[in-house]
Each structure stands twice: as C-alpha cells, then as structure tokens.
Image (cartoon, rainbow, N blue to C red; front, side):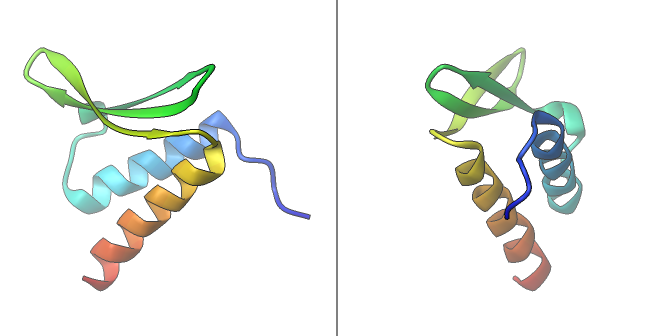
Length: 73
C-alpha cells in the first residue's frame, strides 16, 4: 500500500527542491484547486505559472525529478 500524499509532504518536497536549486522558499508557491496542483515562481511582485499537475502524485514525480537531476546532474 502506498502512503497518502499530503499537502504538507508536497510543500516539504518543494522546499527541498528550492534548497537544492539555491532558491529561497518564498520564491515558489504551490496551490491546490479543483483542476489539480499548480506551481508558481515569483517574478518581481507577482507569481508566474510554471507547472500544472492533475494529481498530487504527478507533482511528487516532478519534484523527485528535480531533486534527482540536481543531485546527479
């Protein structure tokens, strides 16, 4: 049985990705809506859309890829 993906676990993965990429944690924002999960990156005074995922599992896969790529790139 797989573990349930929580909003906190997604935010933790986002924070780890930020750290590995050398970004401040407030430079990105995760948001959940009826259509799925959305990742935004701060650009000046506003946030620009970076990625949209229909499921939390897709967002986990994205962060897993980012952290793996940075660690092994």
